[in-house]
Image (cartoon, rainbow, N blue to C red; front, side, top):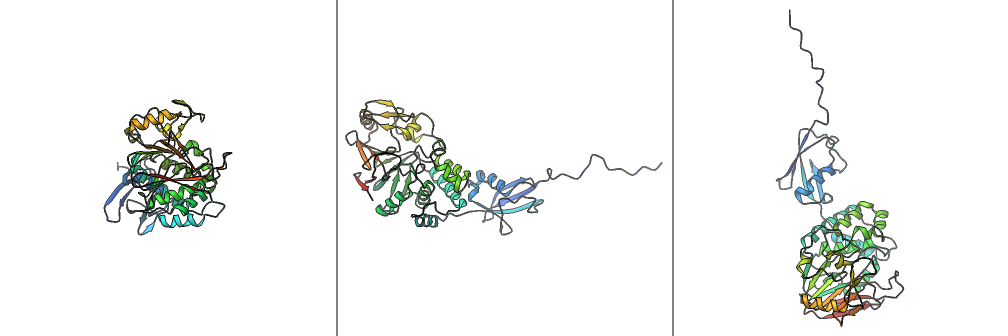
Length: 386
């Protein structure tokens, strides 16, 4: 009896798309291999970028992927691009035009609403500044001359006035900002964006410290979240918050002037404790990092309970003792409204600096104060009233 023709196994079938794999080789422009990725047909270009960002230390918003000299759209998939078998693509890094961003923001000074910035450009700005902040120590060590600026709280017009009066950042006009860039004011996004663009352009001439408001928990409530959500979406707010989590929190100028947003901490015994603070970090509810951004001076001696409900107050005796213990001359901080733009404390051993004129959230009038530190550490103050 003749053998019957073999019949196909009923269980056999054509491979499903889930079983197919596209081998994507990623090269840089020099032709060196960056990654070799086995991908499913439904994998998007955005997902490829996210896979690459840890491998190449380049955030997805800074990556440009090209295939056959054509840039790839983030929404494309391997299947929609017709990729099968092995495919080679090229990775380049997008540039940030800081000069253009600065120019756009400066020209928008008299506008009622925010400057017309592209969301993708602001995403790249956050990525670049995060990288810069990560490369800086938590306690920066600086030399004068420097101009020190206190809270700005979204008062973009006030920032522009300071720059017009004192000069734009340059090798001879170096700035140290004490934090408080967002919330409360009408143009938080433009304020922090302009400072970030200057930081990206001149990282050594624009020093940005963190405050309690450069944090998701505060900026979610006091205005920055709403502004980002209205004009660019929640994702941009999250990117800014991620960048905030990498910012340094204090600076030591001429080895003797301690600059910070809030103030002192009962936990602070050695400046190396600040250097050893881990990043990225959200602002905790207590501890050294919290106190550096939240604490306030007080007319009462010793450590006291803070009316803010967070951190402590510290008296004149605490300030003098800590300055002596840490071999410092001056504590320079912001965080509180002072009528004359600056206010000395502890017999001139501590100063609160406020840089918003006529701050509308307080009953008292206020002046915009800027402190200048000379090359040899001498301090003078400039008060802008108009």
